[in-house]
Image 1 (cartoon, rainbow, N blue to C red):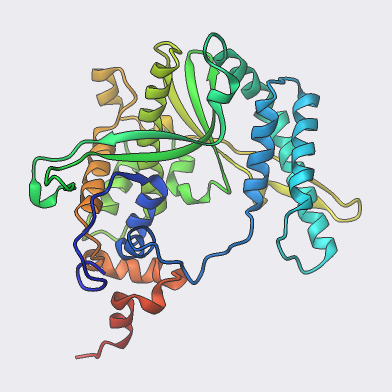
Image 2: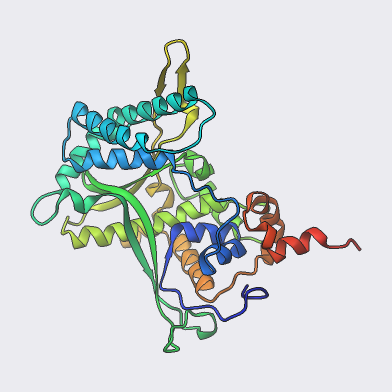
Length: 358
């Protein structure tokens, strides 16, 4: 490790994913194991993700260009059925497998009924000229933001030429659509639970701003890497979406970012007698909770200087190979170590387990 493990200077970083940034927030050492040394976690699950099955089914339906309820639902069901036939996840019984398939179909139906038709129409409004549906529908379309190097060489991301290099941060979204005067990026997620406070607030000022600042305060008890990462992800998505908007010549529209949960069982009801499932979706728009209205009033762009500055600082630390977690070790040990697949080979964790009192 760098800083006391696998030897060798840090290699220059050309691009990062927002998932990698979240891993770094949760534990810098875990990031080093997973993204620098590319070690396989003992806790990784190689099985297919049911959320990904729905993601691909919905995107396939949207890619058809159809905008009616029945056409979207039928196309999504067809793709889901084809994927499910090859889905090799291990269930304890055929009944459970059948039930999980029913839940997926209910979620697909809820998506089409609640937002799918509107979003498909928004995709149609994006197309035209040189822009096709394929340009705005994924899954896993990469939007990116470039973080320029700092002038401080000792903390910079140095390339082979010895000069600081910029780092590209990538965030995946599933499709982009027009909604009135806005261009919106949508991303399917398992649940909204990781958003924490962001799920229940609609503005940056106040609770969210304080919570974000407290996360980085070493004297604070607040440690919320998932919610902080969601704000950093929003910064990347909105900047990347503006670049996509300009590249596709979609006009000077404001940009927004929404997350759509596909595995939130808290909104699911099951009738075991009829073997039927009903569910609904709670969609989170992270744009307003990210925007600093003061900055927006000056720039007329959806920006937040606090979040953007913190994102640049984190990217700088990653580029400089700073993976020592000890500055927040008490939080890391309590929240990250218990479910970490690298704990068995992490010298920080081992040292904390065998330390002597006194």
